Image (cartoon, rainbow, N blue to C red; front, side):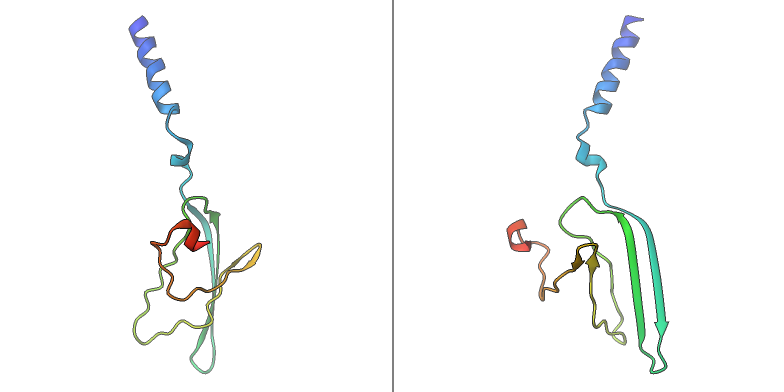
Length: 99
């Protein structure tokens, strides 16, 4: 019986000794997409992402467009306002360079 209790306590120790950041992965809760097709064939798309983004320095929204589509006037904002568009962004930059 002592061996079972000791094993149980050891298992609990290992379960709760996992670093907290392992549970802090980015998570998207909802995505609200509104697309308006204009008479000239252009489209205005608004996406609102709600979630927890506490891991890393960036979150990616894949936009692999075919040759016949063009993305223009792209803006990204949060509750603090708009983000600055940086040409030639390099994901391998250091934290200081990204700041």
